[in-house]
Image (cartoon, rainbow, N blue to C red; front, top):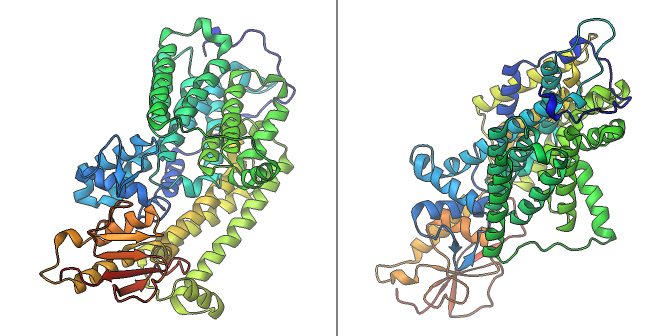
Length: 566
């Protein structure tokens, strides 16, 4: 540890414990990597594009095909980038590179799977380097062997990563091919760059520079400028001793953010929250950031005399930035997502000072909640497969009419393995023996991963059946083909629409192979897709009506104009 950046004489808070050497026992790397892999794959693999990320995929697919502009993408007459160019570019490049081998859908998601893995890695390393600072180390024991700084830092970093994996808000938003996943990786990179600033100049510059540039080119230019300011303020006591390479990425990132925002017309449209917004902020934030927020709150309280130390200030400053940004934007969960890495880092420093009763409460909650939830997943899967119990089977049939479940041995084997692993972890955690610092987060992280694996293997077929536009697009294509004759002009084989949002247009267009007309430019289209039936008219003939099985409130009606060339 370089003592030049230890901030001189520090006042050690009374919260610091004198730890035993078994408290910093290493979490096996193989198990940690397997847990991360099991968390990442479900949600990215084995499903069609849904509403949450369907528009992004179709834009990437069109970019890869060269049919829309890469800097100002316009789909069916609508501007779609929102400043998130980098996400579309990475997806399009991946489709071009490997889409022919693994299919365009999975290929478009590979960069975002890597981004989530990068988030985990950089958050771990940021916590590791922050925990190695002298002000973060525990009190040396009066008797017994001293704890190596690296061992303590590794135990803290393991706990931080487990806390991030356990965060409920990461499940949905973290498994989408969207700019927000890149922003998440960018925040982790900035945390890492800030953590090593002063003694690893090259890595610090790389982390800060890449993080700020990714933020700027993924639709968060305003956040880039605020993040640059937070970096400078958090490291203000070391500014004179920082290498010039520290300032270069700050300047480049700020310049890129200003350019990106000017291209988009300064997209930041925050507003002062009212009481209802504040109430929703706490309601959403309490579950979205669980269990990171109670750990972070406890860390702030127990380390309150050291809040200006870098290992704490960096974490709470970026947590506050993301949370206030979410509040200003009307509780946007996409910005809430960005608070998870710094909250997890801050929560990691609560683990060595956490009371045993509090950790036991979190453990018992995780044990009961995730065990019960896993049982529900298995029971509903059995109901889908066999029709028993009858009530759950009837509920599933009502929510996904027409779905026929089939036994998939690979999915069952994966689910059984995950369930057995959960039982083994519970048995280990409840055993009467000493555990390391990260013990309190093992059940929460493993429980979240268990449910995610079970849903992604057992429930994915029915969820995909109810959510995909594949069947809608195929039905519309068949209806159009059946109504065409050799005399039908090629220019008329397009769709006008009324009430169909852009995401639905994009996915229907992808699966049907048909194109929608731009707003106000459908005079040559013989076909019309609407969300409400047209009044009886001799000018239009109904060809098809339907919708996604899981969405009764989204009926679609396809008409053909009578009197066009046929």
